[in-house]
Amino acid sequence: MAHDRFIAHIDMDAFFASVEQLDHPEWRGLPLAVGDGPRSVVSAASYEIRKFGVRSAMAVAQARKLCPHGLFVPVRMWRYKEFSRRVMAVLQHFSPLVEQASVDEAYLDVTGMERLFGPPEELAAAIRAEVLRETGLTCSVGIAPVRFLAKIASDYNKPDGQTILREPDVRAFLDQLPVQKIPGVGGRTLEILTGLGVRLAGDVLRHPPEFWQQKLGERGLWLFELAQGLDDRPVTPFTPAKSTSAENTFSRDTRDPVVLRRWLLLQSERVGADMRAQGVRGRTVTLKATFADFRRITRSRTLSEPVQDTKSIFETALALLAELNPRQDLRLIGVGVSQFGEKPRQLSLLTPETPARPKTALDNALDAVRGRFGKGAIVRGDLLDFDE
Image 1: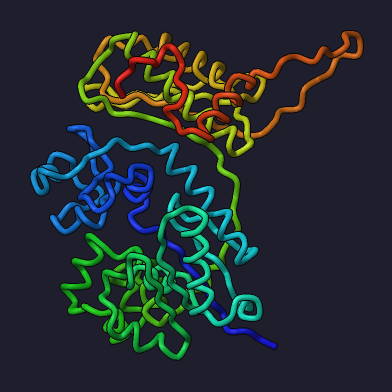
Image 2: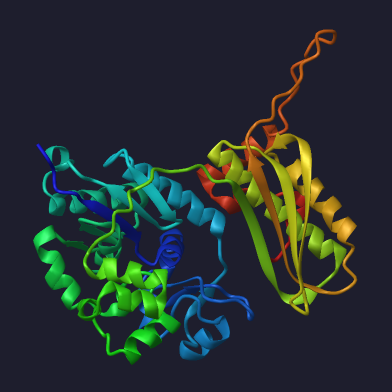
């Protein structure tokens, strides 16, 4: 028996800001933005601060003018990644086909799942309830016959809402859909469409595909397909991450070796913790630096053995910084590790292997304490009085 195709899109509500409000109950209900440096941008905006016109990707300086009494807090990407992993684990309960699209959104192919979870309305409600139960956070769910419509639908009843589109509803939905809601339409493309009198997705069908190919090239053909509700892209299950990194923009440019060293240690801790949580090791350590004049530079070193311990990552990053020997102030520094996977090691037939204390023993102990009591429960001595 053939099943109607159903794709679900799950989008966490104001994810970074919601995590901060969950971790700090006293901030709940207050206007809050994630991003606090004078030269930073807003990474996430709570629904309370959006009422003042603050949006993600807006300069923090501009956001502060719009909402002077708002809370502006630093980005804690390690924390958001922890919650992201928990959300993705929940979604695995609802379908074997889960594709993580970003840290706070995912697609599920839920075709044929009615027998287990009931109709799409009940499935969407079950997903929302389970995510809330396991994380304390709300999400919004869109379910539709194709990917791009599921993504649009998940945005329709935010926060903590759901929208279900069935095949017979698609044409009427598209006929009234503002064309800028179609993923990939923005900026210059939107200007061209507006100039052609195209305001709604349904307006695209007034012209044949050849017209759109002439106006927009391959993007025009893609737009014509979406305007018909066609999108055959499958949900591709999770593919392991190939790298992880941490970086920070300074509130004041610096080349002070003590300050840079402490930033590298903090970032190496974050990168190592993320790798240990994923159960991966990497062979290439990369140092990223942006100078005061915005010139960017990277330096990499590939190690003989894959690592995941903070000490190895930090020492390699420190050596790369010494090689760089910046003679001009830096505005940003970052550490990354890539080339995940174990490299086969040649064992000696002559020298017996002696079990060594794993390099990650200290890190594992720190991870365990922080996992139970929070990130600030234990701090390395070198970072004890470090003001991030």
